[in-house]
Each structure stands twice: as C-alpha cells, then as structure tokens.
Amino acid sequence: MTEVNIALEPHVSLEALASLGEGHIAYVKQIRSEDVPGLFPQAPTIAPGLKLFALHAADGTPIMLTDSREAAIANAWSNELEAVSVH
Picture 1 (tube, rainbow, N blue to C red):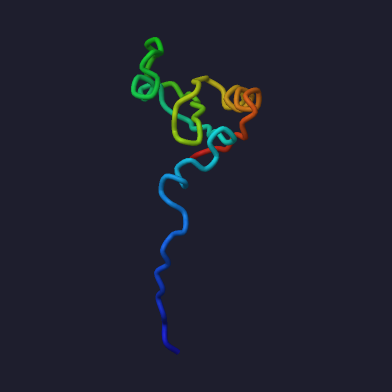
Picture 2 (picture 1 turned 135 degrees about the vertical axis):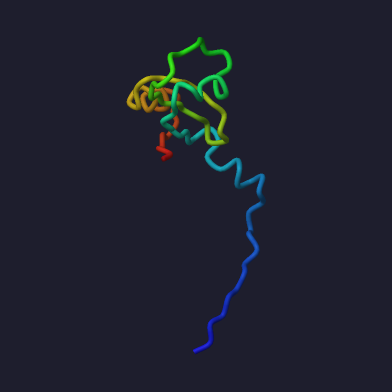
C-alpha cells in the first residue's frame, strides 16, 4: 500500500480565524501573580506566589482578574460570554 500525504490550503483567512468567537467566547486561564503586571498593567502590586484567574476575550484581550475560577466564569456569563478554560 502506498502512503499519500496531501497538504490542504486553509479556506479561512488568518484574520477570520483570529476573530472567531469575538463577542461570544471568553477564556479563563490560571496565572501567577508574577504575570499580572504584563497582562494588567493598571492592577495594584500583588504579592508573589499567588494563583489567580484571568478572563480573556476570544482575541486574547484581558478582561478581568480574580482569585477564583468561579468568579471569572460568573463575570463571563454576566457579560453574555461563553466561558472556556485554557490549560
């Protein structure tokens, strides 16, 4: 039997792919308090070594920061966003 490899060109532009889920999907990601200044420059100084949760828009824009995954999901729901987790 002969093995055949076929490369298919995507039918979706990179711009269209990047905008999938905008206004509908947000993701929750666990972060360390040391990562906060890079994601949320306006946030006050937070003690190092804490596990926090960030809610991001589908395009990666940070929306909120909290110490509870449940609070991040509740915020997404209150803004009519479907929350998904990122590991």
